Image (cartoon, rainbow, N blue to C red; front, side, top):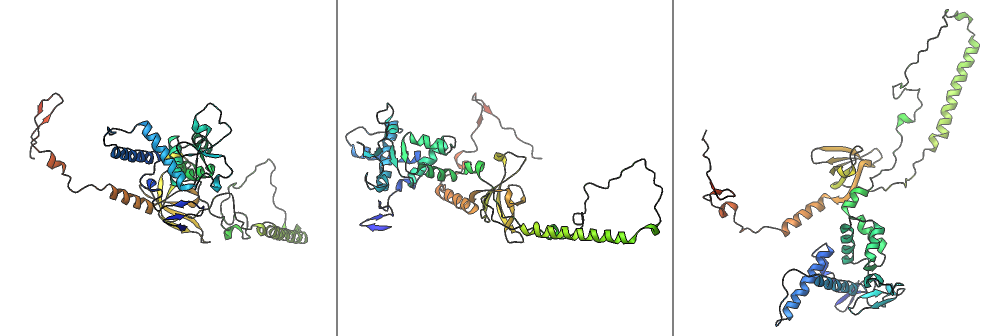
Length: 382
């Protein structure tokens, strides 16, 4: 930021006053900001017109429409130096009779509305424009990028509109509940029992196939005498089996275990999670809309010091879940506490409000809808 007199100039060469974007500090809704500007314009009109009838009652559609034009003019004045701005050099821009910068399109002679034929040019980095995109997104049932781009094109031409719309949709908490991806962690190294040289079923200890008994009609006569067994052939066979097992283990070690290299995985988004974050807890047998919310109270790393398990506090209990079952909402508990404290401070009730008991005396009789007085029954003091 560079100073130019009483103004400050940002990196794009646009002069900005210290009081710029003041109208965006009171409300987060574009419609409420427009109505606030309309009430200010009415107040100024009533202060100037002393000899005329003052405007009273609710705001009219003409007042809201005029206030929106003034709001767009303020946004353009704070974002663009003039119609010769370097960001507008490649566009055919002109200034209409109301002082708004509009774009000349190839459908100027089409029989349509002026906003569609010559839309109002708006920047993408202004706070009011982000409020506008967010309001259109919510009022149109959380529309997607392309649909929202078409709806905004009916009245405005936002520079880098697709990028701005994606950034606004990415911050929508309701859309995050449906579209947010789960966390992921890099693949861990194999345990020792998965790579050691052992016999079949030595580690797991469970033979899923079980022993196989076959019965045929061949009768067993008996075992031959051990004196008939050729020891030379038996020793050769034993040595052959031992060599075969050793060769298989050597090939398994060199051809398979040697290729198990830990490479970075690019298939999923890996993010850091911190204590106090509000997350969704994934459940396979429940719809995504009914997934419970939880707050991270503990992060448990694995043997490689990578976060792989978290302890969550839900509305009723505590749960242990792997990090792959966690869907972050980009909301932390510290933000919730600060938001609640700000709301409580903003809407603090005055101390001089009388209690309900002081307003309504005890001697007021109870009456029915017809006006008949109801006699309160006296309960026995048992």
